[in-house]
Length: 151
Ligand code: DQA
Image 1 (cartoon, helix red, strand yellow):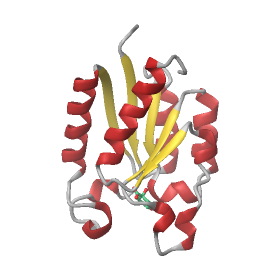
Image 2 (cartoon, helix red, strand yellow; image 1 turned 180 degrees about the vertical axis):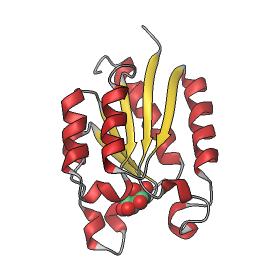
Image 3 (cartoon, protein in one colour; image 1 turned 90 degrees about the horizontal axis):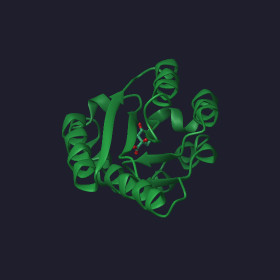
C-alpha cells in the first residue's frame, strides 16, 4: 500500500499557541506541536504536511490544494468550527476523509456556542480534549481506517 499522506490544517489564532490561554490549550507552541506530529507520522509510516492560516478563504484554498497530494485531512478549524459553511463545503467538495481535531473538549467548554461544530458532518469523526495529543490520536485514527480498508 502506498505511504499515506496527510495534510494537517490549523485554523485562526493557533499560531499563538504557547501563550494563548495555556490553561485551556496547553503550553506547547504550534512549532512544537508540528514537530510532534512529524515524529508520530514517521513512527506510523505516514507522510504529513502542516499549515496554519488565520483566514477562512485561505483555509478553503489549502483544502483544495491538499486534494492534489494528500489521502486525508486533519483539521482544527478553531473559531471557524462554529461558523464556517465555506470550510464544510470545501471538505465535502474534495471528497477526502477528514478528522476534526480540537485541543480542548469543545463539548465541555463554558461558552455554549463552542458545543456545536458546523464542520463535523463533513468529517469522518472528531477528536477533542487531549491538547496536542488530539492531533497524534487523529493520525492513529486515520491509520486504523486505512489499515482496515475503509479509506
Ligand atoms: C479550538 C476550540 C475552538 O472553540 C476555539 O475557537 C479555538 C480552538 C480547540 O482546539 O480547542 O480556537 O478549536
